[in-house]
Amino acid sequence: MLTKDQLQLLEQLLSSASHEQKIWLAGYMQGQIGQASAGTAPATAVNKPNVMIYYATETGNSKGLSLQVMKAVKAAGYKVKNAAVNRVKIEDIKPDTLAIFLCSTHGEGDPPETALEFYERIKAAEAGALDGLQFAVAGLGDSSYEIFCGFATDLDREFQRLGAKPFQDNALFDVDYASHTGAWIEQTVKNMDKLVGAHAPEQTVSVHIADENIVRTGKGYTRLEPIIGTIKQIVNLNDIDSNKETYHIEIAYDDEVFYTCGDAAGIIIPEDRHNGDAAPRLYSIASSPSYHEGEVHLTVALAKHKTESGETGFGIYSKYLSELKEGDEITFYIHQNQIFNLPGDDTDIIMIGPGTGIAPFRSFIYERSERGSDGRNWLFFGDQHMHCDFLYQAEWQEHLATDLLQRIDLAFSRDQDHKIYVQDRLKENAKDVMEWIDGGARIYLCGNKDPMSKDVDQALIDIIASQKGISAEDAGEFLADLEEQDRYLKDVY
Ligand SMILES: Cc1cc2nc3c(=O)[nH]c(=O)nc-3n(C[C@H](O)[C@H](O)[C@H](O)COP(=O)(O)OP(=O)(O)OC[C@H]3O[C@@H](n4cnc5c(N)ncnc54)[C@H](O)[C@@H]3O)c2cc1C
Ligand SMILES: Cc1cc2nc3c(=O)[nH]c(=O)nc-3n(C[C@H](O)[C@H](O)[C@H](O)COP(=O)(O)O)c2cc1C
Image (tube, rainbow, N blue to C red):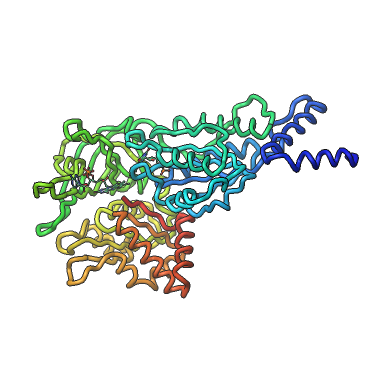
């Protein structure tokens, strides 16, 4: 169709054009054709690049947001995929895609646990490794923390160091993010259209969000709009002789505030109790929304330490909670967790929850009972001594007797001359654990991040390696696959 000279000119131009210039040219040509024929070009007339949406999440907010962004980007005519950053390597990020990163911040300005390795890879990469990539970052955070959206800010800086170019400013969202991200999504799509030269008509991209991806907003769902409940019951679950005090606290409330199993309650402390530390604390919800309607139950361990003068000091919030009395008012909100929740009714679950890690599993078991779930339930629990530290012992025995709980394995570390922990019980049951996993079971882990959750990770890798006869490295990949498929879920703190 072109003459030889024209073809030569075109090839010359293309060989010297950057990736962005080629995208611009495509849009320009499309615009020319549109003007010559119909006058206006439709929004999807340009050959739009693929879009990758990466998310780094701990409690699922960024993942939920990625689904909303995906819908809007797809509706605007782009091919789009989303992926957790967990195992993404630099070479997986293709410069001919547009990349959107959605990331929360945890710890003290740190990446979510699942994004730690990704961030290490980014920091270790050489300048220029992401040359040509055009990207946008949105951070989810909580401005009551000292380092607001620290990970999003760090990531944005690192990407630029590696040669990538932001196509819009870094957007940082606070706890009320769900009220603002709709407008951000619309603007992002418009910016992408502008970037690729699509002559998008002045229209609003309608973001249709499926019910399951809607984050509940408003009163009761963030620390900005907490609700007031009343203490219905408070009881120390540890018996005489125990080194611990763990309080079962039942809060009754009247507001129309809903939670699902796996959510936590954020506690707001009265001003005269916080000693200047008013960053709210979260506690896993130990009640079932169906079984314990209108109530939120917590399992709170009183945090203790030795002060410099050798006296016993206490954690601020757990001390406040432990001293509440029946009838007292308490201010709290629901902190939603969109990942750590129950699977379908026929799926087996393995729950590993030593200490206060037991809390969400009490919620799970009552909820499954209410739903009449067919899936089997297996609990691993551990603490120091059986006779004084077996939290909710009578309830678990009842669940076993009524066949709501099929298996329970207990690890009381100080009841014999050598320490036994939940990870040891897992390894003792390696064959059955593997059979449950191969049969589709989901594994849940809740409780202390360090060292417990790391030790359980390692025990699972050992089990997979020995039962499948594969290397530790392959077993690690197997476990990472389970995590990626939301079949190994953690809520650790
Ligand atoms: C998602 C999530 C779910 C959680 N679920 C639960 C749950 O179900 N149950 C539960 O009990 N906890 C849970 N936690 C932990 C909880 O939020 C609090 O972190 C915990 O209760 C300690 O808070 P605190 O205010 O009592 O202690 P802080 O005052 O924050 O102190 C933290 C620790 O430092 C120690 N400390 C304080 N001052 C000193 C000092 N001067 N010298 C030495 N040590 C000191 C304290 O004893 C304590 O151990 C959860 C956390 C998260 C993130
Ligand atoms: C234990 C904990 C620590 C947090 N630390 C920070 C922080 O240091 N800075 C911040 O901006 N937000 C912090 N947050 C708030 C989260 O980033 C915020 O809740 C976000 O919406 C979570 O998104 P995700 O579900 O995608 O992980 C923290 C939240 C928790 C539960």
